[in-house]
Length: 165
Image (cartoon, rainbow, N blue to C red; front, side, top):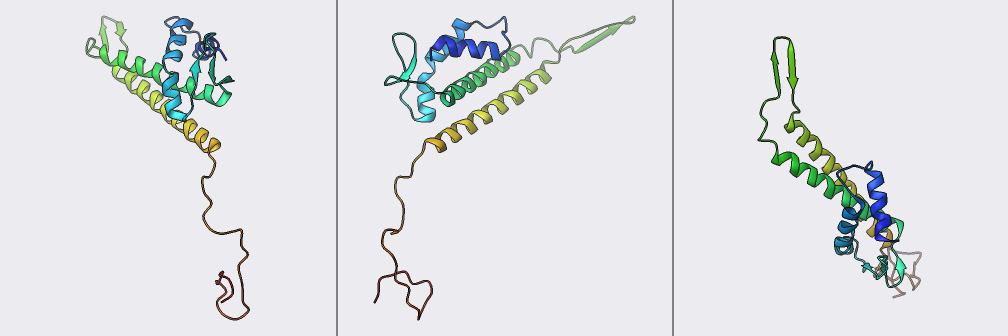
């Protein structure tokens, strides 16, 4: 799958926000393939045709979902940082005079909401990573000797699994 296709999916899933662009998201995706590899222990890279692949094997749907979730966490991090930077510029929340009222956004509440959404996205990312690793894992060793049938004498301990004495 091409980088621009993943960037386009991210752009559309975020609601085609006017402050974002597909090239900016594509740049982020290209820049964070290494982070994806670190998270899920893979070797994906960008080919000359901007395909994300690992030795001619394209990126799968599970890997793509993790990469998209990584972008969502990044997106809400940027929004949260912007809200925190502008928080100390406006201290007035509401002004009323002679029957008219002006209400400004409470930036503290906005930052709390953004922080909550970011934390939710991050927890979902961790869940996706853990599920991916569990799905792709294979046991390295099986403990015990299940290839040799045990000897079970009729007399003695019922838990004896050794060869005949």
